[in-house]
Image 1 (spheres, rainbow, N blue to C red):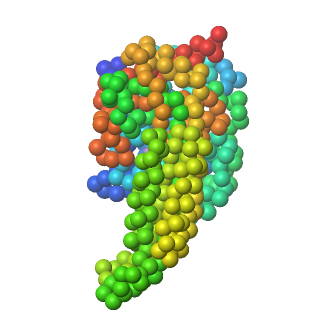
Image 2 (image 1 turned 30 degrees about the vertical axis):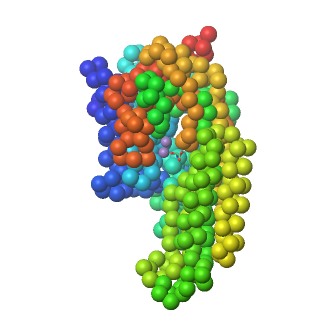
Image 3 (image 1 turned 90 degrees about the vertical axis):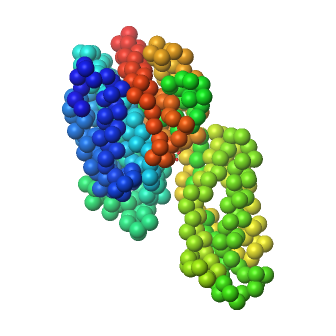
Length: 416
Ligand code: HGY
Ligand code: MN
Ligand code: MN
C-alpha cells in the first residue's frame, strides 16, 4: 500500500504488518528465525519499504536492515528508530515488526508533509532479538552498539548449523561486523515502538504507555542425567529417572519464580532422551528463563534455583549441569527521552501511563550506545508470542502520531 493522504497512518501500518507476516519459515504459522530464508525475504521487503519511503537502505553485515533519511545538518547526531523482524515459533505478527513499520510510516509522513529534520533519521530492523535459534543475546543490535561477542559466531542451532555459516549463507559478512559499531555521541537517541505484551494498558483503557525500565534476563540450559532402564523390570526405588527428577525441578522453578510478585521463571523447552515409552529416561535437557526488574533480585533468584535443582539431583542420585548463555541487565530508560514520548503521547491521545517491561528488547542493547526510550502499544488481552496477538488500527494510528510528534519535538530541541 503506497503512502497517500487517503489511507490513514493506522491503515498503512496494519497493511505493512500483514505484508511482512507472509514471510514465514513454517507454512500455516508465523516462524521467522534469525538468518532463515523467511528472515531474508522479510529483510528484503523492509528494504523496499524503506526505499519507497525515500530512505537509502541496506542490509548490513550482521543482517540488520538500515534505512537512512539524511538531515539538514550532516554533523548532527542521528536519531535511530527501530525494532526487530525475527520472531519466536508460532508467533504473533506485531512483536517486532510494529516498531519497524511505525518508523517507516513516520518517515513517509514527515516527507509527505515536507518536513525536513536537522538530524539524520534512521530506521533499523534488527534480526536477532528473540535469540530463539542461536545461543545469543540481542546480537544484531549489540553489533550497532559495538558490543558484539565474537563467540556468538560459533553458536549452533538445533540442526547443528553454526551462526557464522548461516550468516554467510544469508549474505552477511562475519568480518564486517566490527565496522558496524557506532561511536557514542554519533547517535542522538534510540526510540522503539513495541506492543506491550501484557494487560496493563488494556486495563487502564489507554492506547499507549511509556516504558520505565526493561527487566533483566538470565537464560541457561540445564542437563539432568540419570540412567536408562527397562520400564517393566527396574523397581521404583532403584531408578535414576531423569524425567521424574526434571519434573520435580520444574515445579520447584515455578514455585521459586512465583514467590515474589516481580520475578518470573519459565521452562520453555525440554528434551527427553532416549524418548521411548518403555525406557526409563536417561537424560533431560531443559531451558531456564529467569527475570527480575532488579539485577540483585535476579541474581538471588538464579542462585536459589541453582541450589534447589542441585539438592533434587543429589537426593535422587542424578547429575546436573547448568550452563548460562544469556545475561541481559535490567535497563532503565532515559528520563529525558521518556519525557519527550510522554509529552507527545499527551498531545496525541492524552495521559500515557508509565510501566515496566517484563519482555526484553533491542532497546537494552541500544541503551549501551545512546539514550533509549520505548513506547508501548496496547495489545488485546496482553497476548503475545502467540498467533492471537493483535492491536487495533486506531491504536496503530496513535502510535505513529506519537512517534512523529516525538521526532518533531527532538528536532525542535536540536534546532534551538
Ligand atoms: O523474550 C523476550 O522477552 C523477548 O520477546 N525476546
Ligand atoms: Mn519483541
Ligand atoms: Mn518477543
